[in-house]
Image (cartoon, rainbow, N blue to C red; front, side, top):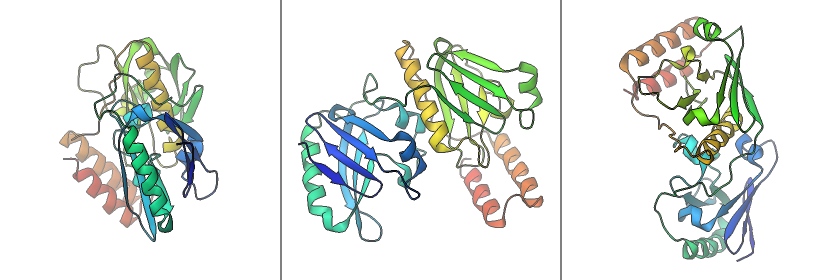
Length: 281
């Protein structure tokens, strides 16, 4: 290979052993893509390649990574919207024949669909930081720090004080997208076996909120921490989003209702978020 396929928001460069994905910068380009800038994906990191019709006269070339090959996708745990998936290349429909050629070339280079025993795609480099609703999260490559904001942190977090976690203390990361009502980033530590405390009371977690912990900042952060955990010799344990405690769901809906009554959430937002929470039961 060695050719280039330019799509909407990204260009894929096909090399002998990998695909170099370069993301465009611009107002319409998803912020996550702009934050990532470029990613080199070895052929051995991919499990499959598809080409399918897209919206409004487009086709979509989609490369699916093997489980465990990319810390970013492992941290995301299936929560990214299609428009924010860095492995999707959207192309004008007139390039379908060319896209099919490259899809066939990539398929011929694939080796296995089995989970990878190590990360094959490089994580975003440290240092990284972002503002959550209740604190600032920082990662320097060897430790994660949480510094609480007096305007948002719970009394439990103030009592515990600012936190620092060495990578060697951690077993994984749980990232719940800030695009849902109760998003957060939680650090999982060796020996944690009990039911986790709610994120807003857990000193090992920061909570997101409207405008806080956006995907393009918090997800690369989570991916970088996961990669450092695996490099340290631990087996990272990203926790997939599953069914929640009914009592927790009820409390979240109650809080959502308070925001709605206060005029901070619109009728449509209230209905959508309530339905989203109920779907997790």
